[in-house]
Image 1 (cartoon, one colour):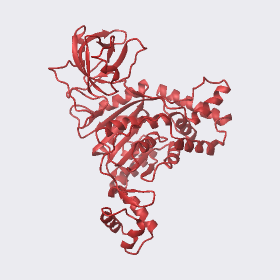
Image 2 (tube, rainbow, N blue to C red; image 1 turned 60 degrees about the vertical axis):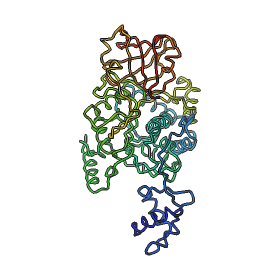
Image 3 (cartoon, rainbow, N blue to C red; image 1 turned 120 degrees about the horizontal axis):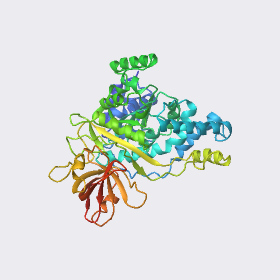
Image 4 (cartoon, one colour; image 1 turned 30 degrees about the vertical axis):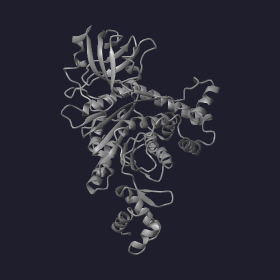
Length: 496
C-alpha cells in the first residue's frame, strides 16, 4: 500500500518547482512503488491538491483564476458524443437501428415519453426508453446548461476545481455540457446520481470526457442518497445503506459540493421540495444549486413553485438568478411560467436517420423526431446571499407590481426583471416581467419603440430594467396586467 502522505508532501513541494512526474516521485516514496501506482495515487489526490494531469502524464497546479464565460453558443451537438450514442444504438439493434422493428420501437418510445411528460404521467426508463430519451433530448439539454453557467461565470463564481453532484443525471446532457463549458485546465470531481437504465447511456458518454473530469455514477435514487423517507421496502434499504455510508464518511454527500445540478428531474420526483432542500444542504458555503426544467408550462411552473417553496425573506436560500426578488420583503405568487430561448442546434445525424425512415413510410410528419430547440426554465439558488446583480427596488422611486390594481390607467415607474423573449405574433412586442412582489402575471407591451425605450427589445433574458412612465392596464382576456411602453416611456437597462 502506497504512503499517500508522502505522495502529497512530495507533490506539494515539487509543484512550486516544476511539473510533477510520477517517475520522479517514485524515488521519494518508501519502497519505491511503480510509477503507475504513484500516478493513480496522484489522480485520486489531484482534486484536493489542485493539480491537473497533462497529456504527457505529468501534473501541474490548477490556475487560481475563476472560470470566465467562454462565449458558449453551440450550433451543433458535438460529433464525439453523437458517435458514442450511435455506438450504443448499433450495439443494441445493429447497424440499421433506425429501420424495421427497432426503429418503430424507438419512435413509439419517443412518442410515449412526449405524451407522458405532457400529461405528467410517471415515466419508467428501461434501456429502450433511455436510448429514445437520449436521441430526442440529449442535444438540447447539452446546450442549455452552458447558457445557465454563464450567470455564475460572469461574476467569477465558478472555480477551476469543482466538486459536482448531478441529481437525476439521466443520459448526460448537463454533464457533457458542463465538461465542454469548462476550460481544459479545470479539474472536476463529478458524481452522478441515476437509478435507471439511463445510467448505462451516461456511463458510455462519460468515456468521451477528458482525463481531469473524474466521474462516478451512483445507481441510487435521490431520496435514498439523501436518506429521505422511502416509498418502498427496497428504497428503505437503500436509504438505510446511504445513511450508514454518510456516517462512515463513505457517501458522496459526506463532503460539500461547489455545484449541485438537478437537471429536468424535479417534475419526476414524488417530493421535489424535500429533495431540493436536501440538495441545498449538500452545498458548500459558497456553492450554487442549478435546477433546469423543460420550457413547457407544467414543468416550468413546477420549477418556479419549488424555487419559491425553499426561499422566503426569512430563509438563508437566495434566488441568484434569473427571477430576482427586487423587493427584499416580498415573495411572488403569480404563475411563474418563465423560460429562456436560444438559437436552435443543427439536426444531429441520429435524429435525422430516425425521422427520415418515418417520413418515407408516411407514418409521421416530417421532422417529428427532430428536437433542436434550446428552450429551458432554470433557477440558480445560493445560501451565501450572492445574487447575479445586487439591485434593489425602493418605494420612493418605484411602484410594486403587487400594487398594480391601484395603478390601473396610471403611469408608473417600475423596476423589473425581463423574464421572456418577445411573446407576440409580430405586432406589438410583449415581454413577461416580474419584480418579486407580483401575485398576477405582468407584461411589458411595446406599442411604439423609440430611442428612449429600445433597450427593452435588446435586453437579455434576466436583465433588470427601469421602466419610467409605463401605462398600467388590466388585460381581462389574459387575467394579467399590461404595462404599455410607448413614446412617453423610457426603458433603461440597469443590469444586462
